[in-house]
Length: 383
Ligand SMILES: Cc1cc2nc3c(=O)[nH]c(=O)nc-3n(C[C@H](O)[C@H](O)[C@H](O)COP(=O)(O)OP(=O)(O)OC[C@H]3O[C@@H](n4cnc5c(N)ncnc54)[C@H](O)[C@@H]3O)c2cc1C
Image 1 (cartoon, helix red, strand yellow):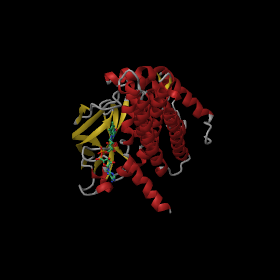
Image 2 (tube, helix red, strand yellow):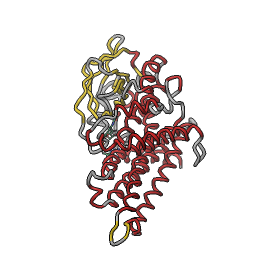
Image 3 (cartoon, protein in one colour):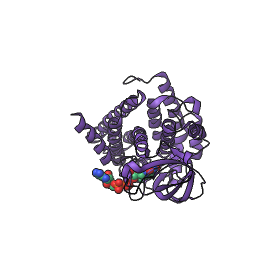
Image 4 (tube, protein in one colour):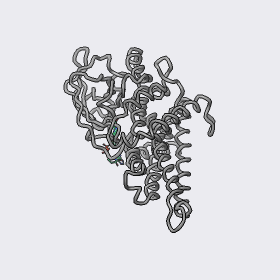
């Protein structure tokens, strides 16, 4: 990718994602939101289009199209349906984590299931009820018992945890006070004895994606279910989240763009004081600001994706992209509601759904405050 022009592959992935998002997702998004209907069929269709493993080797069923293609596809899918996009984001993140840290057996057992859509979802089980920003404080434990590990504890806010064929579960294998050094991660399969799925959260937005608590009660896994080596769990989580943040930045841009597009349409249709409201300078300036901010966010997200694809460090750049894109997407959605006036506040128009969907983007996969901590650490180190 040059700064502005996608390569042939990237353009093809973007076009495929755009076509599906506009023709199939966007017309169904309001219904799915209203009914809290998990997008099972859409997830399968995205898998068939190669979008559940965009940056995954073809040998494992992926599209092998790179991190930039993934970001471009995510922007398109999120523009069509933010809930479907979060399932796509987590599936891609879990598949990439397995490819990077898994054994050959783990990769061949799980990755093709995710990329093919045979698994509706895969989950990322890191957060606990008392600690999201500070996962080193986790209490879930995995005790060695002969050739097995026995997992006890619980996780909170796990996207598609009730739909996942496989869940990456982080657990403490070291002493209770071992902080980040004593954490390992394990691959837990759907239906495992001792895995209990909690109630589905009734969320403000992303209502067509499920978010559940998971409890592990003497859940036994063989030592071969460990991902990476003992004690490596925390660095695996950080590595996964680095890439995940590019995905959430891209998702934010998709939601913000959808909000902006419906605001523009409305500004042309609605009249007040004898002229279309889009002719008032106050509204034109709002739209100009939003368009500028989303364009800048897009460049930040693509910069992080280009660095990732080149195998260069991108932790700080990924955090900048996620921080900026999620905050600007929230502003875009807020402005879109404002431009819609009273109609922005009711479900006759999609503006209120975009507003609700965008809200979580400054929270999950690291809050804005945590992104600022990551960026500041680098700023202070570099100068
Ligand atoms: C819809 C949804 C889906 C999710 N999906 C998943 C998932 O699939 N897997 C998963 O593992 N987790 C998931 N999460 C969890 C999510 O990542 C956490 O909610 C998030 O990391 C924040 O953690 P917390 O909720 O515990 O907030 P806290 O960590 O308690 O933070 C509360 C507030 O304090 C601030 N804060 C905390 N520490 C600091 C600090 N050092 N400096 C400054 N401010 C600070 C935070 O920024 C925030 O404003 C999901 C959450 C939601 C809402």
